[in-house]
Image 1 (tube, rainbow, N blue to C red):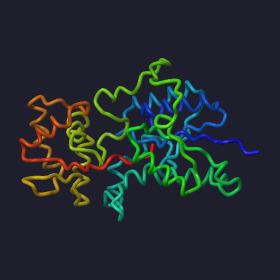
Image 2 (cartoon, rainbow, N blue to C red; image 1 turned 45 degrees about the horizontal axis):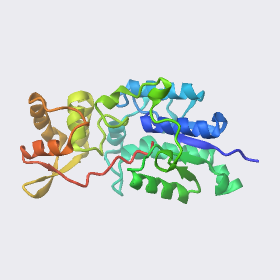
Image 3 (cartoon, helix red, strand yellow; image 1 turned 60 degrees about the vertical axis):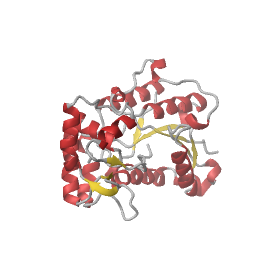
Image 4 (cartoon, rainbow, N blue to C red; image 1 turned 90 degrees about the vertical axis):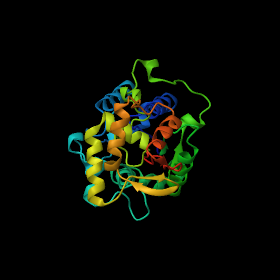
Length: 289
């Protein structure tokens, strides 16, 4: 009789850590897999790596890595700019971000095909692994998308923070593990210099991660593609990070807070002083872990 496998997408973020703890407490660690797509040390903060390891150690589980091209050493991993530089583009023909596809989605599906596809073919969907995400009740679009995509492949999904009524933990501080210190500046534990993020994110990147900002500038120049579209004088235009650099420099000189934990309205009002208005339909990050 096949044992049910529980795959937790263990991204290094606080929400996915809480999910990992809840799943292990409910089902036991024997059949739980902590799956991570390691990210280059150039864009994933070392404190995030510290955090996901401490959570894994607390649970008594190893981290299973599904990395691009099977690379084990995070120092050898390409970052989001590298993979786009190699491809000569930022998006595929469907407009989806290449960095997500190359660094996370493709390695994720390759891992499932190599290690868990047999559950579909031999036992049917009722015995296929359940894949867990750290999306909460405010992220219904992401929940529904992952449910539909993986369901079409024969896998089941669950979202404890959005669907479980009974919870045992709400912060890793309860078990003596401090969340990543990146949360003092950023709202997430994803890449610094996300190619799908807002202008506010890029202002924060300019101030706190200038190396990543400059790599993004070079990427835009190489592929002749701008990360952002804004509205200027009622007209939608493309604006490059190179063009935004002097604006961000001025904002920083004025002492404007360089953190994502601030009013987006306040930031938008500052942009209007420079004749810019960010589009309201900025796409959310589609990274799946």
